[in-house]
Length: 237
Image: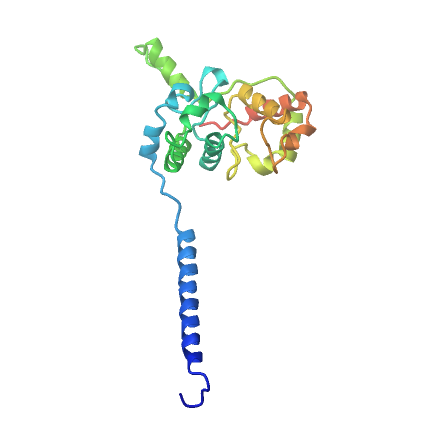
C-alpha cells in the first residue's frame, strides 16, 4: 500500500476497532439490562400467595393471637420484601417461617406480589356499627379487621421525647415508616417489645449493621415509654 511499510498494520487496526465496538455493544447491553424495571407487582397474585400466610397472620394481615403473629396489613412493601428475603436466606431465624420461604415455595416474584398485596390493605381504625341481627361470629370477624391497639402503661411525654429524637428519622414522625423502615403504629406492642429485646440481645441487626444499634442506649422503662407514646398516636378514620 502507498505510504505504508507494513500493510498488516491496517488489518490489525481494523480488528482492534471491531473488538472495541463489540465491547461497547456488550457494555450497552449490560447497562440496558440493569436499567430494566423490577418485576411488576401483581396484587391479585399476591392475594393467592398470602393464602398459607393467613393461617398465622390472618386473612387480612391483621396478625394473630394478640401479637404472637405480627400485623402485616398496611406495612411498607419494601420492608416486607426485605424481611422475606432475610427469612428465606436464613439471615433472620424464625422456625415457623422456614417452610414458607424456601425458594421452591416463595419465588422472588411471589415476594414482590405478596408484599404489595399486604401493603395495599387498609384496616379500619374504629369498630363497625353492628346490626342486632349480626351473630357473634360476624362481630368477631369484623372486629379482627379493626386496627386498634390498646394503650399501654408508660410515660407518654418521655416516650415522645425519645422517639422523636432517636427513632422518627427512620420510622417517621407519625410512626408510619419510611422506605424499607417499618410502620410501628398499629403494631402489637407485645410484638414490638419482643423484637426490641431481640435486637438488644444481638439476635437481630437493628441499624447500620450493628446488632442492638440505637436501642442499646435505652432502658427497658424507656422502651416501654416509647411504646406508650406509639399507642397514643394511632391514626383515626
